[in-house]
Image (cartoon, rainbow, N blue to C red):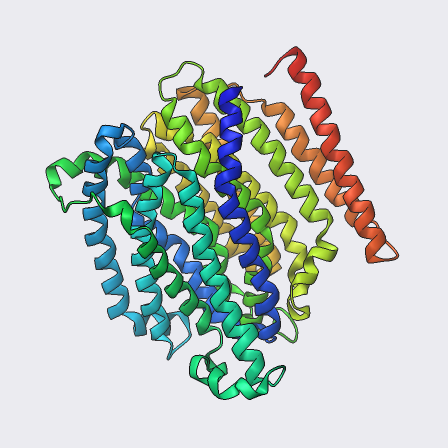
Length: 498
Protein backbone atom coordinates (compact mmCIF):
# COMPACT_ATOMS: atom_id res chain seq x y z
CA UNK A 1 0.00 0.00 0.00
CA UNK A 2 2.97 2.35 0.60
CA UNK A 3 3.86 1.90 -3.08
CA UNK A 4 0.34 2.93 -4.07
CA UNK A 5 0.62 6.00 -1.85
CA UNK A 6 3.84 6.95 -3.60
CA UNK A 7 2.13 6.41 -6.96
CA UNK A 8 -0.75 8.64 -5.85
CA UNK A 9 1.67 11.28 -4.58
CA UNK A 10 3.69 11.29 -7.81
CA UNK A 11 0.48 11.39 -9.83
CA UNK A 12 -0.60 14.51 -7.93
CA UNK A 13 2.80 16.14 -8.43
CA UNK A 14 3.09 15.31 -12.13
CA UNK A 15 -0.58 16.12 -12.47
CA UNK A 16 0.08 19.62 -11.17
CA UNK A 17 1.68 20.57 -14.48
CA UNK A 18 -0.91 18.67 -16.53
CA UNK A 19 -3.94 19.80 -14.58
CA UNK A 20 -2.94 23.43 -14.08
CA UNK A 21 -1.56 23.68 -17.60
CA UNK A 22 -4.46 22.08 -19.37
CA UNK A 23 -7.00 23.96 -17.29
CA UNK A 24 -5.32 27.25 -18.13
CA UNK A 25 -5.13 26.26 -21.79
CA UNK A 26 -8.73 25.17 -21.57
CA UNK A 27 -9.64 28.61 -20.24
CA UNK A 28 -8.19 30.00 -23.46
CA UNK A 29 -11.19 28.39 -25.17
CA UNK A 30 -13.20 31.08 -23.36
CA UNK A 31 -11.01 33.69 -25.07
CA UNK A 32 -10.68 32.08 -28.50
CA UNK A 33 -14.40 31.38 -28.95
CA UNK A 34 -15.19 35.00 -28.15
CA UNK A 35 -12.38 36.78 -29.97
CA UNK A 36 -13.08 34.63 -33.07
CA UNK A 37 -16.88 34.64 -33.00
CA UNK A 38 -17.18 33.01 -36.43
CA UNK A 39 -16.18 29.35 -35.91
CA UNK A 40 -14.64 29.03 -39.39
CA UNK A 41 -11.85 31.46 -38.33
CA UNK A 42 -10.38 28.68 -36.16
CA UNK A 43 -10.79 25.93 -38.74
CA UNK A 44 -7.23 25.96 -40.12
CA UNK A 45 -5.77 26.15 -36.63
CA UNK A 46 -7.91 23.24 -35.45
CA UNK A 47 -6.92 21.10 -38.45
CA UNK A 48 -3.18 21.71 -38.00
CA UNK A 49 -3.21 20.94 -34.30
CA UNK A 50 -5.12 17.75 -35.03
CA UNK A 51 -2.22 16.56 -37.20
CA UNK A 52 0.29 17.53 -34.50
CA UNK A 53 -0.88 14.56 -32.39
CA UNK A 54 0.23 11.78 -34.81
CA UNK A 55 3.26 13.83 -35.88
CA UNK A 56 4.47 14.00 -32.27
CA UNK A 57 4.41 10.20 -32.17
CA UNK A 58 6.36 9.99 -35.41
CA UNK A 59 8.94 12.56 -34.30
CA UNK A 60 9.70 10.98 -30.89
CA UNK A 61 9.68 7.48 -32.44
CA UNK A 62 8.87 5.62 -29.22
CA UNK A 63 12.18 6.69 -27.69
CA UNK A 64 10.62 7.91 -24.45
CA UNK A 65 9.51 4.40 -23.48
CA UNK A 66 12.73 2.96 -24.93
CA UNK A 67 14.72 5.18 -22.58
CA UNK A 68 12.92 3.66 -19.59
CA UNK A 69 13.55 0.18 -20.96
CA UNK A 70 17.26 0.55 -21.74
CA UNK A 71 18.23 3.35 -19.37
CA UNK A 72 16.48 2.10 -16.24
CA UNK A 73 19.83 1.51 -14.52
CA UNK A 74 21.44 4.73 -13.35
CA UNK A 75 24.88 3.78 -14.68
CA UNK A 76 23.47 3.36 -18.21
CA UNK A 77 21.39 6.53 -18.39
CA UNK A 78 24.00 8.96 -19.75
CA UNK A 79 25.07 6.58 -22.52
CA UNK A 80 21.51 5.66 -23.56
CA UNK A 81 20.57 9.35 -23.42
CA UNK A 82 23.38 10.17 -25.88
CA UNK A 83 22.43 7.27 -28.17
CA UNK A 84 18.76 8.20 -28.31
CA UNK A 85 19.47 11.94 -28.43
CA UNK A 86 21.75 11.55 -31.46
CA UNK A 87 19.14 9.49 -33.27
CA UNK A 88 16.35 11.97 -32.51
CA UNK A 89 18.38 14.98 -33.60
CA UNK A 90 18.85 13.40 -37.03
CA UNK A 91 15.39 11.87 -37.32
CA UNK A 92 13.33 14.81 -36.02
CA UNK A 93 15.52 17.32 -37.84
CA UNK A 94 15.01 15.50 -41.14
CA UNK A 95 11.24 15.32 -40.68
CA UNK A 96 11.07 19.03 -39.82
CA UNK A 97 13.08 19.86 -42.93
CA UNK A 98 10.69 17.85 -45.11
CA UNK A 99 7.66 19.58 -43.59
CA UNK A 100 9.27 22.95 -44.21
CA UNK A 101 10.09 22.16 -47.85
CA UNK A 102 6.61 20.83 -48.65
CA UNK A 103 4.69 23.32 -46.47
CA UNK A 104 2.73 24.89 -49.33
CA UNK A 105 1.55 21.62 -50.95
CA UNK A 106 0.57 20.33 -47.49
CA UNK A 107 -1.50 23.38 -46.58
CA UNK A 108 -3.12 23.40 -50.06
CA UNK A 109 -4.12 19.74 -49.60
CA UNK A 110 -5.67 20.60 -46.23
CA UNK A 111 -7.76 23.26 -47.97
CA UNK A 112 -6.23 26.44 -46.53
CA UNK A 113 -4.06 27.84 -49.35
CA UNK A 114 -1.66 30.69 -48.65
CA UNK A 115 -0.85 29.59 -45.09
CA UNK A 116 2.23 27.45 -45.67
CA UNK A 117 4.09 29.52 -43.06
CA UNK A 118 1.95 27.87 -40.37
CA UNK A 119 3.23 24.43 -41.36
CA UNK A 120 6.81 25.74 -41.28
CA UNK A 121 6.36 27.18 -37.80
CA UNK A 122 4.85 23.95 -36.53
CA UNK A 123 7.73 21.96 -38.07
CA UNK A 124 10.13 23.94 -35.86
CA UNK A 125 7.85 23.45 -32.84
CA UNK A 126 7.85 19.68 -33.40
CA UNK A 127 11.66 19.52 -33.55
CA UNK A 128 12.05 21.61 -30.39
CA UNK A 129 9.41 19.59 -28.54
CA UNK A 130 11.02 16.29 -29.54
CA UNK A 131 14.33 17.25 -27.93
CA UNK A 132 12.51 18.63 -24.91
CA UNK A 133 10.55 15.36 -24.57
CA UNK A 134 13.80 13.42 -24.24
CA UNK A 135 15.01 15.73 -21.50
CA UNK A 136 11.66 15.47 -19.71
CA UNK A 137 11.72 11.68 -19.79
CA UNK A 138 15.18 11.74 -18.23
CA UNK A 139 13.84 13.87 -15.39
CA UNK A 140 11.06 11.32 -14.87
CA UNK A 141 13.54 8.44 -14.84
CA UNK A 142 15.60 10.27 -12.23
CA UNK A 143 12.40 11.01 -10.25
CA UNK A 144 13.11 14.74 -10.36
CA UNK A 145 9.43 15.56 -10.42
CA UNK A 146 9.76 19.07 -9.03
CA UNK A 147 12.06 20.24 -11.82
CA UNK A 148 9.84 18.48 -14.37
CA UNK A 149 6.76 20.23 -13.04
CA UNK A 150 8.49 23.60 -12.69
CA UNK A 151 9.62 23.72 -16.33
CA UNK A 152 6.27 22.44 -17.58
CA UNK A 153 4.53 25.21 -15.67
CA UNK A 154 6.92 27.82 -17.06
CA UNK A 155 6.15 26.57 -20.58
CA UNK A 156 2.46 26.93 -19.86
CA UNK A 157 2.97 30.37 -18.34
CA UNK A 158 4.79 31.63 -21.44
CA UNK A 159 2.13 30.21 -23.77
CA UNK A 160 -0.76 31.63 -21.76
CA UNK A 161 0.98 34.95 -21.18
CA UNK A 162 1.71 35.50 -24.87
CA UNK A 163 -1.82 34.61 -25.92
CA UNK A 164 -3.22 36.93 -23.26
CA UNK A 165 -0.94 39.67 -24.62
CA UNK A 166 -2.04 39.08 -28.22
CA UNK A 167 -5.76 38.52 -27.71
CA UNK A 168 -6.72 40.33 -24.50
CA UNK A 169 -4.20 43.07 -25.03
CA UNK A 170 -3.42 43.87 -28.66
CA UNK A 171 -6.63 42.55 -30.24
CA UNK A 172 -8.96 44.37 -27.85
CA UNK A 173 -6.88 47.55 -28.08
CA UNK A 174 -7.14 47.55 -31.88
CA UNK A 175 -10.90 46.90 -31.62
CA UNK A 176 -11.19 49.96 -29.36
CA UNK A 177 -12.42 47.99 -26.35
CA UNK A 178 -9.78 49.55 -24.09
CA UNK A 179 -6.63 51.74 -24.14
CA UNK A 180 -7.00 53.06 -27.71
CA UNK A 181 -3.93 55.27 -27.19
CA UNK A 182 -1.81 52.11 -27.32
CA UNK A 183 -3.05 51.16 -30.80
CA UNK A 184 0.15 52.18 -32.67
CA UNK A 185 2.21 49.98 -30.31
CA UNK A 186 -0.24 47.08 -30.59
CA UNK A 187 0.03 47.11 -34.39
CA UNK A 188 3.76 46.41 -34.08
CA UNK A 189 3.04 43.05 -32.45
CA UNK A 190 -0.34 42.00 -33.79
CA UNK A 191 -2.28 41.96 -37.05
CA UNK A 192 -6.00 41.18 -36.51
CA UNK A 193 -6.28 39.77 -40.04
CA UNK A 194 -3.98 36.92 -38.99
CA UNK A 195 -5.38 36.55 -35.46
CA UNK A 196 -5.44 32.72 -35.11
CA UNK A 197 -1.83 32.54 -36.35
CA UNK A 198 -0.69 34.01 -33.05
CA UNK A 199 -1.74 30.84 -31.24
CA UNK A 200 1.06 29.03 -33.11
CA UNK A 201 3.48 31.93 -32.61
CA UNK A 202 2.95 31.69 -28.84
CA UNK A 203 3.51 27.93 -29.02
CA UNK A 204 6.77 28.41 -30.98
CA UNK A 205 8.22 30.92 -28.52
CA UNK A 206 7.24 28.77 -25.53
CA UNK A 207 8.82 25.65 -27.06
CA UNK A 208 12.10 27.47 -27.70
CA UNK A 209 12.17 28.83 -24.15
CA UNK A 210 11.43 25.37 -22.70
CA UNK A 211 14.31 23.70 -24.53
CA UNK A 212 16.60 26.48 -23.30
CA UNK A 213 15.50 25.82 -19.72
CA UNK A 214 16.16 22.10 -20.22
CA UNK A 215 19.66 22.65 -21.62
CA UNK A 216 21.37 21.57 -18.33
CA UNK A 217 19.94 18.07 -18.90
CA UNK A 218 22.17 17.82 -21.99
CA UNK A 219 25.39 18.70 -20.17
CA UNK A 220 26.70 15.12 -20.35
CA UNK A 221 25.32 14.53 -23.84
CA UNK A 222 27.88 13.35 -26.37
CA UNK A 223 27.25 12.71 -30.05
CA UNK A 224 27.10 8.96 -30.38
CA UNK A 225 25.53 7.19 -33.34
CA UNK A 226 26.44 3.54 -33.88
CA UNK A 227 23.73 1.70 -35.79
CA UNK A 228 24.75 -1.74 -34.53
CA UNK A 229 24.35 -0.57 -30.92
CA UNK A 230 21.19 1.37 -31.64
CA UNK A 231 19.48 -1.61 -33.30
CA UNK A 232 18.12 -3.23 -30.08
CA UNK A 233 16.63 0.11 -29.04
CA UNK A 234 15.24 0.65 -32.52
CA UNK A 235 13.68 -2.82 -32.64
CA UNK A 236 12.04 -2.24 -29.25
CA UNK A 237 10.77 1.23 -30.19
CA UNK A 238 9.57 0.54 -33.74
CA UNK A 239 6.38 -1.35 -32.74
CA UNK A 240 5.68 1.43 -30.24
CA UNK A 241 5.75 3.93 -33.09
CA UNK A 242 3.18 1.99 -35.11
CA UNK A 243 1.13 1.46 -31.96
CA UNK A 244 1.39 5.15 -31.14
CA UNK A 245 0.55 6.25 -34.67
CA UNK A 246 -2.44 3.94 -34.82
CA UNK A 247 -3.53 5.25 -31.43
CA UNK A 248 -3.07 8.85 -32.54
CA UNK A 249 -5.06 8.24 -35.72
CA UNK A 250 -7.65 6.53 -33.56
CA UNK A 251 -7.87 9.73 -31.49
CA UNK A 252 -7.83 12.15 -34.41
CA UNK A 253 -9.60 10.28 -37.23
CA UNK A 254 -12.82 12.13 -36.46
CA UNK A 255 -11.23 15.56 -36.96
CA UNK A 256 -9.05 14.45 -39.85
CA UNK A 257 -12.01 12.98 -41.76
CA UNK A 258 -14.75 15.38 -40.68
CA UNK A 259 -14.37 18.01 -43.40
CA UNK A 260 -14.04 15.31 -46.05
CA UNK A 261 -17.19 13.46 -45.01
CA UNK A 262 -19.71 15.96 -43.64
CA UNK A 263 -22.40 16.90 -46.23
CA UNK A 264 -22.30 20.59 -47.17
CA UNK A 265 -25.75 21.43 -45.77
CA UNK A 266 -25.83 18.94 -42.89
CA UNK A 267 -26.07 21.74 -40.30
CA UNK A 268 -28.49 24.39 -41.65
CA UNK A 269 -26.96 27.84 -41.56
CA UNK A 270 -23.44 26.55 -40.94
CA UNK A 271 -20.62 25.66 -43.30
CA UNK A 272 -18.60 22.45 -42.85
CA UNK A 273 -15.75 24.65 -41.54
CA UNK A 274 -18.08 26.11 -38.91
CA UNK A 275 -19.19 22.64 -37.83
CA UNK A 276 -15.60 21.40 -37.66
CA UNK A 277 -14.53 24.34 -35.46
CA UNK A 278 -17.52 23.83 -33.17
CA UNK A 279 -16.59 20.17 -32.70
CA UNK A 280 -12.87 20.96 -32.29
CA UNK A 281 -13.56 23.52 -29.56
CA UNK A 282 -16.22 21.41 -27.79
CA UNK A 283 -13.78 18.50 -27.89
CA UNK A 284 -11.57 20.47 -25.52
CA UNK A 285 -14.18 20.07 -22.77
CA UNK A 286 -13.13 16.42 -22.58
CA UNK A 287 -9.79 17.67 -21.28
CA UNK A 288 -10.90 16.98 -17.71
CA UNK A 289 -10.51 13.27 -18.36
CA UNK A 290 -7.45 13.53 -20.58
CA UNK A 291 -5.42 15.47 -18.02
CA UNK A 292 -6.01 12.88 -15.30
CA UNK A 293 -5.00 10.10 -17.70
CA UNK A 294 -1.80 11.91 -18.66
CA UNK A 295 -0.84 12.74 -15.08
CA UNK A 296 -1.35 9.13 -14.03
CA UNK A 297 0.75 7.80 -16.92
CA UNK A 298 3.64 10.11 -16.01
CA UNK A 299 3.79 8.58 -12.54
CA UNK A 300 2.76 4.99 -13.34
CA UNK A 301 5.19 4.10 -16.14
CA UNK A 302 8.41 4.57 -14.12
CA UNK A 303 6.86 2.77 -11.13
CA UNK A 304 5.71 -0.29 -13.09
CA UNK A 305 9.04 -0.57 -14.91
CA UNK A 306 10.87 -0.39 -11.58
CA UNK A 307 8.74 -3.34 -10.35
CA UNK A 308 9.52 -5.44 -13.44
CA UNK A 309 9.87 -9.07 -12.33
CA UNK A 310 8.27 -8.48 -8.93
CA UNK A 311 5.79 -11.27 -8.18
CA UNK A 312 3.38 -8.73 -6.64
CA UNK A 313 3.30 -6.45 -9.70
CA UNK A 314 0.06 -7.99 -11.13
CA UNK A 315 -1.78 -7.16 -7.90
CA UNK A 316 -0.31 -3.66 -7.94
CA UNK A 317 -1.48 -3.13 -11.52
CA UNK A 318 -4.96 -4.46 -10.67
CA UNK A 319 -5.39 -2.26 -7.62
CA UNK A 320 -4.08 0.86 -9.35
CA UNK A 321 -6.37 0.19 -12.33
CA UNK A 322 -9.30 -0.21 -9.97
CA UNK A 323 -8.86 3.14 -8.23
CA UNK A 324 -7.86 4.89 -11.43
CA UNK A 325 -11.08 3.72 -13.11
CA UNK A 326 -13.19 4.75 -10.12
CA UNK A 327 -11.65 8.23 -10.19
CA UNK A 328 -12.33 8.50 -13.92
CA UNK A 329 -15.95 7.40 -13.52
CA UNK A 330 -16.45 10.14 -10.93
CA UNK A 331 -14.94 12.72 -13.33
CA UNK A 332 -17.13 11.44 -16.18
CA UNK A 333 -20.29 11.76 -14.11
CA UNK A 334 -19.25 15.07 -12.54
CA UNK A 335 -18.46 16.88 -15.78
CA UNK A 336 -21.38 15.40 -17.70
CA UNK A 337 -23.92 16.41 -15.05
CA UNK A 338 -22.59 19.97 -14.90
CA UNK A 339 -22.27 20.78 -18.58
CA UNK A 340 -25.11 23.28 -18.29
CA UNK A 341 -22.75 25.73 -16.56
CA UNK A 342 -19.36 24.36 -17.70
CA UNK A 343 -20.53 24.88 -21.29
CA UNK A 344 -20.85 28.62 -20.63
CA UNK A 345 -17.07 28.87 -20.99
CA UNK A 346 -17.63 28.42 -24.72
CA UNK A 347 -18.78 31.30 -26.88
CA UNK A 348 -22.49 31.22 -27.72
CA UNK A 349 -21.81 30.15 -31.33
CA UNK A 350 -20.06 26.98 -30.19
CA UNK A 351 -22.46 25.64 -27.50
CA UNK A 352 -24.63 23.73 -29.96
CA UNK A 353 -22.02 20.95 -29.89
CA UNK A 354 -22.09 20.33 -26.12
CA UNK A 355 -24.21 17.10 -26.26
CA UNK A 356 -21.18 15.18 -27.60
CA UNK A 357 -19.09 15.87 -24.48
CA UNK A 358 -20.26 12.92 -22.28
CA UNK A 359 -19.40 10.54 -25.11
CA UNK A 360 -15.97 12.13 -25.57
CA UNK A 361 -15.31 11.89 -21.84
CA UNK A 362 -16.24 8.20 -21.89
CA UNK A 363 -13.92 7.62 -24.85
CA UNK A 364 -11.06 9.25 -22.93
CA UNK A 365 -11.91 7.11 -19.90
CA UNK A 366 -11.51 3.95 -22.00
CA UNK A 367 -8.23 5.30 -23.40
CA UNK A 368 -6.97 5.76 -19.85
CA UNK A 369 -7.98 2.24 -18.85
CA UNK A 370 -6.31 0.87 -21.97
CA UNK A 371 -3.12 2.78 -21.17
CA UNK A 372 -3.09 1.23 -17.72
CA UNK A 373 -3.89 -2.32 -18.86
CA UNK A 374 -1.40 -2.18 -21.74
CA UNK A 375 1.57 -1.96 -19.36
CA UNK A 376 1.87 -5.76 -19.74
CA UNK A 377 2.83 -5.22 -23.39
CA UNK A 378 5.86 -3.19 -22.33
CA UNK A 379 6.84 -5.27 -19.32
CA UNK A 380 6.84 -8.49 -21.37
CA UNK A 381 8.28 -6.96 -24.58
CA UNK A 382 5.06 -7.82 -26.46
CA UNK A 383 4.96 -4.39 -28.07
CA UNK A 384 4.13 -5.95 -31.45
CA UNK A 385 0.87 -7.26 -29.96
CA UNK A 386 0.08 -3.73 -28.87
CA UNK A 387 0.52 -2.59 -32.44
CA UNK A 388 -2.13 -5.05 -33.64
CA UNK A 389 -4.52 -4.02 -30.85
CA UNK A 390 -4.14 -0.37 -31.73
CA UNK A 391 -4.49 -1.07 -35.43
CA UNK A 392 -7.80 -2.79 -34.63
CA UNK A 393 -8.91 0.32 -32.77
CA UNK A 394 -7.79 2.52 -35.66
CA UNK A 395 -9.76 0.37 -38.11
CA UNK A 396 -12.90 0.76 -36.01
CA UNK A 397 -12.27 4.51 -35.77
CA UNK A 398 -11.89 4.99 -39.52
CA UNK A 399 -14.82 2.76 -40.51
CA UNK A 400 -17.03 4.22 -37.78
CA UNK A 401 -16.34 7.80 -38.84
CA UNK A 402 -16.82 7.01 -42.52
CA UNK A 403 -20.20 5.42 -41.78
CA UNK A 404 -21.48 7.75 -39.05
CA UNK A 405 -20.23 11.27 -39.86
CA UNK A 406 -22.42 11.62 -43.00
CA UNK A 407 -25.49 10.48 -41.00
CA UNK A 408 -24.97 11.93 -37.52
CA UNK A 409 -22.34 14.66 -37.88
CA UNK A 410 -20.07 15.22 -34.91
CA UNK A 411 -22.27 13.04 -32.69
CA UNK A 412 -21.18 10.16 -34.94
CA UNK A 413 -17.56 11.18 -34.25
CA UNK A 414 -18.12 10.88 -30.50
CA UNK A 415 -19.89 7.51 -30.73
CA UNK A 416 -17.08 6.16 -32.89
CA UNK A 417 -14.45 7.35 -30.40
CA UNK A 418 -16.18 5.39 -27.64
CA UNK A 419 -16.53 2.25 -29.75
CA UNK A 420 -12.92 2.33 -30.90
CA UNK A 421 -11.36 2.85 -27.45
CA UNK A 422 -13.68 0.23 -25.91
CA UNK A 423 -12.57 -2.26 -28.57
CA UNK A 424 -8.95 -1.70 -27.60
CA UNK A 425 -9.68 -2.22 -23.90
CA UNK A 426 -11.48 -5.49 -24.63
CA UNK A 427 -8.70 -6.87 -26.83
CA UNK A 428 -5.98 -5.79 -24.41
CA UNK A 429 -7.78 -7.47 -21.51
CA UNK A 430 -8.41 -10.75 -23.33
CA UNK A 431 -4.89 -11.09 -24.73
CA UNK A 432 -3.21 -9.81 -21.58
CA UNK A 433 -4.86 -12.36 -19.33
CA UNK A 434 -3.28 -15.12 -21.41
CA UNK A 435 0.27 -13.75 -21.23
CA UNK A 436 0.38 -11.69 -18.03
CA UNK A 437 -2.64 -12.52 -15.80
CA UNK A 438 -3.79 -9.61 -13.64
CA UNK A 439 -6.61 -9.99 -11.07
CA UNK A 440 -8.72 -7.03 -12.20
CA UNK A 441 -12.02 -6.29 -10.44
CA UNK A 442 -13.68 -6.45 -13.86
CA UNK A 443 -17.30 -7.03 -12.90
CA UNK A 444 -17.30 -4.31 -10.28
CA UNK A 445 -15.75 -1.73 -12.58
CA UNK A 446 -18.23 -2.48 -15.39
CA UNK A 447 -21.05 -2.05 -12.86
CA UNK A 448 -19.71 1.35 -11.80
CA UNK A 449 -19.57 2.43 -15.46
CA UNK A 450 -23.13 1.27 -16.05
CA UNK A 451 -24.45 3.06 -12.94
CA UNK A 452 -22.56 6.24 -13.89
CA UNK A 453 -23.97 6.14 -17.42
CA UNK A 454 -27.47 5.58 -16.07
CA UNK A 455 -27.09 8.55 -13.75
CA UNK A 456 -25.99 10.82 -16.61
CA UNK A 457 -28.86 9.68 -18.81
CA UNK A 458 -31.43 9.94 -16.01
CA UNK A 459 -30.50 13.50 -15.10
CA UNK A 460 -30.51 14.51 -18.79
CA UNK A 461 -34.27 13.80 -18.85
CA UNK A 462 -35.00 16.24 -16.00
CA UNK A 463 -35.60 19.96 -16.57
CA UNK A 464 -34.78 22.50 -13.85
CA UNK A 465 -36.27 25.98 -13.35
CA UNK A 466 -32.89 27.72 -13.16
CA UNK A 467 -29.17 27.19 -13.57
CA UNK A 468 -28.61 27.57 -9.83
CA UNK A 469 -31.09 24.80 -9.00
CA UNK A 470 -29.66 22.59 -11.72
CA UNK A 471 -26.08 23.06 -10.45
CA UNK A 472 -27.10 22.37 -6.84
CA UNK A 473 -28.96 19.17 -7.72
CA UNK A 474 -26.22 17.90 -10.01
CA UNK A 475 -23.41 18.60 -7.55
CA UNK A 476 -25.40 16.89 -4.79
CA UNK A 477 -25.97 13.88 -7.04
CA UNK A 478 -22.26 13.69 -7.80
CA UNK A 479 -21.29 13.86 -4.12
CA UNK A 480 -23.77 11.12 -3.19
CA UNK A 481 -22.56 8.91 -6.06
CA UNK A 482 -18.90 9.43 -5.08
CA UNK A 483 -19.56 8.72 -1.41
CA UNK A 484 -21.41 5.50 -2.21
CA UNK A 485 -18.51 4.31 -4.38
CA UNK A 486 -15.99 4.92 -1.60
CA UNK A 487 -18.17 3.28 1.06
CA UNK A 488 -18.80 0.23 -1.12
CA UNK A 489 -15.12 -0.13 -1.99
CA UNK A 490 -14.06 0.08 1.65
CA UNK A 491 -16.55 -2.63 2.61
CA UNK A 492 -15.35 -4.84 -0.21
CA UNK A 493 -11.68 -4.40 0.71
CA UNK A 494 -12.36 -5.25 4.34
CA UNK A 495 -13.39 -8.73 3.13
CA UNK A 496 -11.58 -9.33 -0.16
CA UNK A 497 -9.31 -6.73 -1.83
CA UNK A 498 -9.95 -8.17 -5.27
